[in-house]
Amino acid sequence: MIELVDVYKTYRRGDSTIEALRGVSLKVEKGDIFGVIGYSGAGKSTLIRLVNYLEKPTKGQVFVDGQLLDRYSVQELRNVKKKIGMIFQHFNLLESKTVYDNVAIPLVLVKKSKAEIRQRVTELLDFVGLSDKAGSYPKELSGGQKQRVGIARALAGNPTILLCDEATSALDPQTTQSILALLKQISQTYPITILMITHEMAVIQQICNKVAVMEEGIIVEQGNVLNVFGSPQNETTRNFVRTVIRNTVPSSVIQTLKAEAKRRLFKLEFIGQSASEPVINGLIRNYDVQVNILFANMTEIQSTTLGNMIIQLQGEDPVIDQAAGFLQNQGVHIEEVDSV
Ligand SMILES: Nc1ncnc2c1ncn2[C@@H]1O[C@H](COP(=O)(O)OP(=O)(O)OP(=O)(O)O)[C@@H](O)[C@H]1O
Image 1 (cartoon, protein in one colour):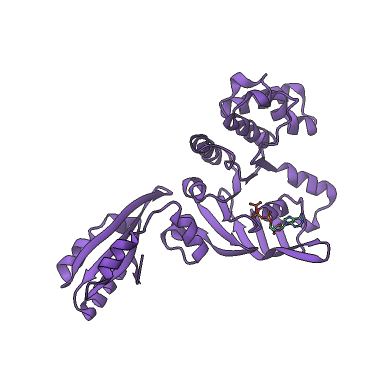
Image 2: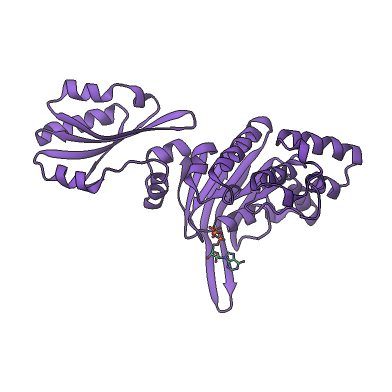
């Protein structure tokens, strides 16, 4: 659906060059809600501008719907762009036009008849819950309502791809929830693929099925959201995951625990099935170790439970090693730690 193959983007500013993207490859499949997360300057906006063909890659290939964007004629490119809707952090509405007229813009541009426009705009305003605001102007709307207008406008031309550029970053937490719920509803209602960039892991957790983590122009980790959240490999990913999944024990507690002999600390991560299985009971029954649960947390992602636990095992070293092996065999991701 959307594919980037070893894409580089270099900007020149005076004598210096800025490598905004350095060999980015990713694949967004049909129906995905794919989130790209990264700190400011990571290259997220550049990536989205390449998909929208507002920028050309310095090197590498960008495919949309299986077609290499480079190879399109101007007319073909215009047609491809019609299939891409976009929503923005600051909504980008025309202040001098009513809600109705804002949503109608893409349809007017492709010269749809008045009747067709009326039908589509009415349908979309109903879908985003703003039927009663058709005659209002953007300045009369709340941030959440403005974003709903932005979403209706993006959907007007029946796009197959929806690009979201920090779509909830300017909104309060409650409004963010309602906009994310709307995006999820769009994904379930229309045959659409969503690519969103954000710096908030909570956004990814809530609606994305895939995620790519960007840092300094490189994708440092990507995959299924459940796997990435369950077992983040990269330090930046871990930092993002920590913002939504708490798995730390106060350092004063750690210091006390570490002072005690024959005790070792382990971080456990359970995904799905194993989260509900009495794995810890099995551990206690089968091995001569004492188990001290220091921290336990369950998070729901993609309708699957993700469990995080920090335990302390007390016993002889070889027995603790066997116990750790047992947990691994039960499908638990286990990691011994010096500190947590
Ligand atoms: N048009 C441009 N000309 C020169 N440099 C640019 C241009 N656009 C982006 N950059 C630089 O490329 C790098 C990546 O920027 P980009 O906006 O893609 O990152 P980002 O992850 O979207 O950050 P933010 O969330 O702050 O927008 C930055 O160092 C930025 O200064």
